[in-house]
Image (tube, rainbow, N blue to C red; front, side, top):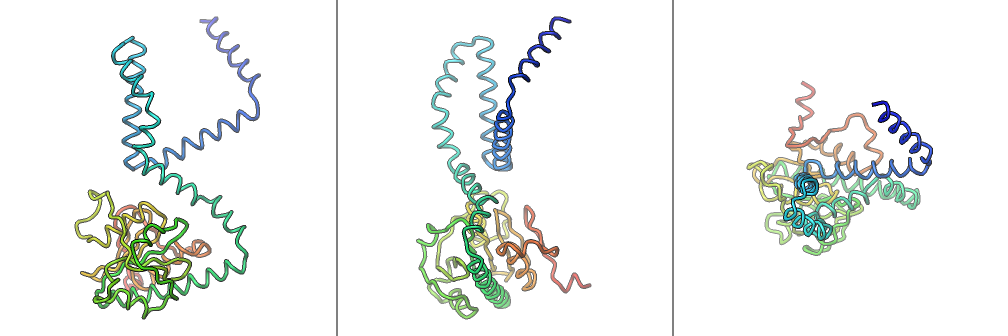
Length: 300
């Protein structure tokens, strides 16, 4: 027993003597990468796939230990092409992870440093005007029960979505938005894309969500399309139901419903304007479908 303790002590001492400052950086970097992989994969289809791969690795280890030749040969052949299989199977998750890295704080700081202050102020001014127009239009649609699907593009560019519609590139206004979603208008069935405070395109086709099991049966095609786009990008989508007139906001695959004009304006500014996120009276968006109380109910 004493010899084992001495051997462990000598091994630990030798390890500490060979330990360098760069090793700390190496360990932190690997831990950070593993943490972010788990964070991205959690509560997605990738989590189940990772569990399956882990089980296969455990079985492969046992086949090595107990010298199960046929099983060992089978798994050896499988893992030789595992990298290619991972790239194919995890293609949507890998794309989402790379887009997530591109939307990280480092990328945001880089954009903030590279853009002149005057240009940023002008963008915020245009964006606030665009938000006000969308809020007023959504309020009108809510009263008339006019279906609408309005997408605010953020860091992830939606060029492939724009190609499915018609480029307008017009100044935002309530009458223009009302004309786009007028029941007899040719572009009213598709989505409107808002880029840099401008109405960039309309009549665009959005991908439907693949997580049909977690979507309420009360939600129609517009809501499913909004969820589908938000699952594959960082866009903020405003949806007005044609059946009920309910106004919803969809972001990052999460939908919150029953917005009033005031609560919609606050939420859009928090999500789209960086300085607005510092406000204390923010409206949180949580997993699932959330009911947002009106100001009148809150006053009571």
